[in-house]
Structure formats: structure tokens, C-alpha cells
Amino acid sequence: MFLKLGFGGIFLFSVIAGSSQSYEVLLAAKFFEGVFFATSISAHVTFISEFCYKDIRDRVMICQASFVAIAQIISPLMSWGILTQEWKYTLFNGYVVLNTWNFYLYIMSLWSLFACVFYSTLPESPKYLVTQRKYDEAREILIKIYKENTGKTAESYPFIDIWKNLDKHEVQSVKSPERSIRHQIVVGLHNVKPIFRKPLVYHLAILSSSMFLILAIYNIVRLWFPQLSTIVEHYRTDGSQDMCVILDTYTSDLKTRGNTIRNSTADICVPTVSGSETYINSIIIGFVCFFPYFITGAVVNKVGKKALLVVCGVISIGVTLGLRYANSKIAVVALFAAGTAISQLMKALNQAVAVELFPTEIR
Image (cartoon, rainbow, N blue to C red; front, side):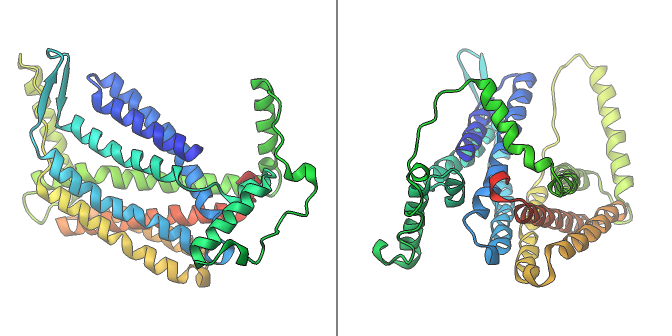
């Protein structure tokens, strides 16, 4: 339910953002996109982990996280094909004006719609159904998975009678009576109460703090790159300039342009359009992000997630600090690619640790 709700909400508010005619509407739509994204991504990690047994769970979670790299290749390609166009359509006698970026948001919203449809076709997690005492449904899903994986009949499933010997009151699905919202909130708080007991509360604090730091550095690096790449593309004059000099040139030009606009009577926005180099560099970063996943997937069970997190953290710090001294386009792309790849990998490892430390009932 959370997956369908999350991706469905992302699609809805992406369409609203694409139709927005004011900054306030766009900002509100993007805010709710973030809310629904958080709703879906949390359930997404738990859902995948509950379909995998312990021996392969880490590798499967790292493998599914590698698809982010595929998205980082497809997105720049789509952006390159769309944002370089000059589209403008007027509807309802000028009340609605759709520019290139509006159509870009419309097209990108289809990904969340596809995700919502795809997740609707997947069964519920058997582990979750067992915790809810829905044993018949869990058994049917396990048999279905067995049939699809082996190609054999349901009768050959070795655990065909699993959970059938449980008490009748546990097997039967009894519809719970209607309860007030207040009661449901109290029950919900009671269900999360075990998280705040030792040692889970310490695990929660450490994992939440580390995830906050990982996402902070990841988003800074990932979201800043398109703008920074455009700045380097337009403001770099020779190979001796480091990043700070290039940024100083850019900010100085912004001040000059701002003063010119304030002294002018025309209210026209003239954006700095990204050249093909920015899109190509973003595609390169996507390809680079593949390699750490392959390496980690091969060694995670031998080395351990904790050791990998420490090593990745040290590398991430070094790469981020190295951006200060980058004085070439190749160095900028290489450092951004390494920083993005390592931070994505740290995010996947942190999620795998959370799945391992917390039981299914409260995961």
C-alpha cells in the first residue's frame, strides 16, 4: 500500500508541478513530491529485504541500489533531448503557458506512474502477512513464488501444509471492528514503542544520524553538479584556474548581471542554458557509479558492511575536499563521479545494516 501510495502521489504532484504557473504552486508540489518519495522509498527497502533470505539479502539490496546508476544515465539522455528544445504552448487564451520545462516534468512523471503500476502487480511480503497472522495468504504467495522459480506444480512444494496446524482462531481472518482515529493512533504508537528500548534505540540513533550525513553529502554533490558543470563550461578560461577562482568569476558576473537588470526597465529572465558537455558529464557519472556496486556485491559478505562503510566514508571525505583544488574539467567530473558513486553505495550499505538490525515486526 505504501509503495502504491508513494509512487502514485509522486506522479500526481509531478503533474501538478508541470502544470504550475507560479513559483508558489511549483514549490508546494515539489514539497509533497518529497513527502511521497519518503513514503515509498522506506517501504521499498523493507519490501525487497523481506523477499530475500539472509545469505543473499545484502547482495540483492546492493544490486537493486545499482539501478540508481541506470537512472543517472537515462535521465541526462532524456534531459538532453527535451530541455534543449524550444517548446511553448498557450492554452485557454493565455491563462496557461507551457514551456519546455513543463513538458519535461510531465514526461518525467511517467516513471513514478510506471512504478506505481508495477508494484501493484507484486504480491505482499509473506513475512509481513505472517506477522499479521494471515497464514493462508502467506502460504499461497510462497507456493506461487515456488512455482515461478522452479516451474514445478504446487503439489510438489515441500511445505505445502505450512501453518495449517495452527489454531483456528489464528488462521481465520477476523475482521476487526471499527475503531476511532484516536485508538488507531494509540495502537500505532504502541507498535513503535519497542524501537525506543535498548539496544534498538542506540541502533536507531546511529543509523539515522549516519543516513542524514550520507544523504546530505550525496545531495550536495549530486544536485550541485549540473550547475557546477555549466559554470565550468562557461566560465573556465584556462587550465590554471581552480574551482574557487571559477566560482568567484561566476558570482562576480551574477552581480554584474543583477545590477544591469535592476537598472533596466525590461523584466526578462535570460537563463544560462547548459551545453552538451553538462549532459555528457552526467552520463559519464552514471556509468562510473556502476563499478562500486559490482565490487561491493562481490566482497560484502567477506569484508563486512561496517568495514566497507568506514572505507567509503574516508574516500568520500577525500573526494569532496579534493573538489576545492580541481582545475580541469576531467578532474571535476572524476571527483564528482567518485563522490556520487561512493555516497550512493554508503546509502545502500546503511539500509542493509538497518534491515539486519531491526526485526520484521518494526522494520
